[in-house]
Image 1: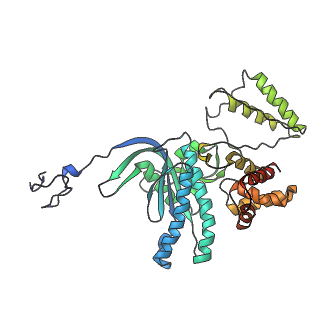
Image 2 (image 1 turned 135 degrees about the vertical axis):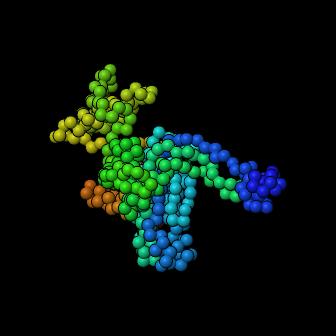
Image 3 (image 1 turned 30 degrees about the vertical axis):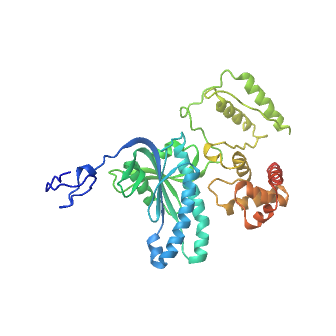
Length: 381
């Protein structure tokens, strides 16, 4: 190809003119991407520059590799995509290449797990290096262009556009150890988490402040995320089903348990029926029923006993974002309050994935079926 600047003939595939260095048109590839609605998560280690000044480079690499391990695990658990590792930060997005109806929720849950893991990781960093270790997380939802960018030497699949830029700015505005999200993300997950509104926040590159919210924890009792907001229509045409569940609820109050299976096509009102029953369960202030809920979700399918984990967490008052040490303390308080057998604790810790070295030793010698029996007994207790 002839150079447009000096007309020198260049071999096919050359990216620059061999004579004057001008970029050649044949080397300029158009970016082929797709516009998608995604939630972008940006996580950054606080004061990594100061860490580099105080520590040997090999020590910094060791610390950051440990950090990337739990950052990547949290994103992968909720089926997000890690687009880029940037020395002391991670860029990830949820909704591409595979989209889910709850990608914003997945991103927020990943952010909370990152913070919980960072608190646990900090204990080792303080003990070994005498340093504080914190992570900031920013999350934003909107349209982005998903494309493979780069050249013959290096390419990456990434999300480009204002949505990604705002997520990075929110990370910078977040307090260390917190998850800060935009209003666009908030409106998708506000019924699922507890928040501290941060109000209008100035972010670099935006002409006007944007509303932001600090995520505190998952709600103990999640609200409704589907349907028309604020609309609660009367329950129609389900009198026999409602009466059946009502009768079973009365039996619960008398000390007799039951199982009720609610089966039907999507949109027939299964969730609506259960919401009505839940309202009924709490209507009598003299005889309230404890409501514990576990959901089978796609990102939990690889986790054994996932719905039961949520039920046990709710029983002991632990949240998904709590540290393992906090959850273990909740288990011990529950044991003391209700007089549970001491030998249940190692199996409940295993169920919730918060084992200590001591409890792991207890489990090590048990065969598969025996271990399952002990976990079932501890859950029943």
